[in-house]
Image (cartoon, rainbow, N blue to C red):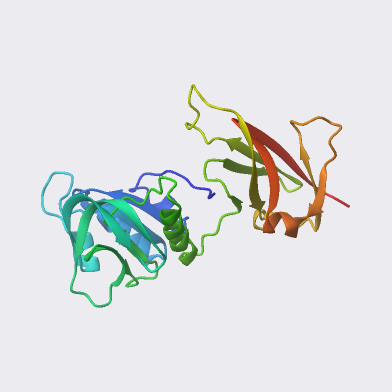
Length: 259
């Protein structure tokens, strides 16, 4: 579970504040936006693009600034293929195949024998392009692939849940944190659903939130006051704890410093 923002690709000053910028791409993109992506990588921001590399501007005139800068082109294919990477294998929708003769580009994903993922370290910030759909669709193999890429960028989640259908959100001040667990995630609830209970594991790293509490107490504020708060350490919460959750339902957990 990662914090993120949604911005316009031409908002260069704002995008400079991020470690990683993810940009969907089609065959057309303005010259200024293509140049902005190059400027981001030169400034040290990593960029991940996926789809088809642009070869025209917004007026459908030839414009291959990105292709010329990073020395590769793409060919539109639109197929479903098995994807192979160093980390795992999975099935995905493929938008394009990558063509390059630059030995400095690192090949990181293939669809059968066709190249669909490359990384360039030409600039201070890393440029990565995937010619495939990078959404996980809750495929655990694809989740492993995405998490491995984020890890390579130094992006680690503050919170984790063992069930991808359970949404976890953490709000905090400098004195406490509130953990929201929602089952199922937003948009996943149907009109006809069978209720059931399930044990899940989750973890939250309070140190990454700036909360340096050696000992904590966790109170489920939706439960009866007769149920005592869970007493543990921040290290234990960062490692992971087990909790029983009802489907559909949710929990709101208040995390406070304990003396």
